Length: 405
Image (tube, rainbow, N blue to C red):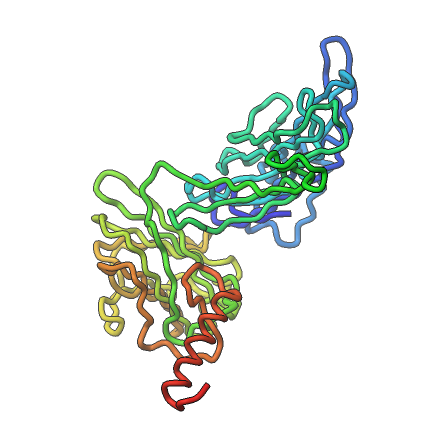
């Protein structure tokens, strides 16, 4: 199972695989079965989804209403016989915006698929997210995905090993900091071609697919705490996208602004500071989007978006729009160097996108101290490396102040 916004409507969708699904193939003169082909069910999120029961055995009606999409996996054959066999498509599924268009892309594997004379090399299919997916029925036996990765496999004369490309997915992060996310998949039974001794067989490999796009995006987006924002384990809450316009092109930088509480904008006061090195723009459109439950108790007239250059004196942004059907508030500004504040009933949520001349992040002076390590190396996650940096800095401070460790 994977979750992402595949159609770009602001609601999270659910992608699930049914790898053991059989199907019937139509030949030139007859019908014949193909076993364990597998298929994907994509269920689209929306206001009417909570509490709904979707009977997937009634898929034609759900496809007609655009509530789901179905993607049937490929089938192939190898040298031992003419009957196509399935590769258990949907064994692993994932979501990642590889082309940076603001919509998550579908990742799915058929690790047991045989291709021509190669037994079980496996195959990975990637389909770009699009509003056209709503109600779509895609058959990868005849249709081609946007990206397809075929395992190298081995010749069928040596049937003792198979590669199983796509046994698992991992990714979604920007490992090389080029503004585009990456995804990785495994080949657990891959042989290392540099060694011939048996003990190196099935050494395994990991394949990385690096995202890219045609638009210019910010090459770096960094986050630091501001106000009383928790240092770690924020949890999901607010999503913000910034569309930069440089006079001819528009590019988007997506940032996840998250906090510990799930109470929505009427919860505890929290602020964020976002730093990006993007400077070549003439206008920026800032869009804040919330989970549906976060604005259930907020009247439309109570919600406002304000801007401040000094973080103290705020003024409402003229021309802002509020779309309660999408839980979204949008405004355009000529200068993004400041603090955006969303207020309702006297309670505020603040985000501070900053475009400094230098890309080195600075800690907000109002940030509360914490005895716990945050993202010390600014790689977008809190892990053991951050803990080691934190402990080293703490020991240096203890040594300089007390003369001992």
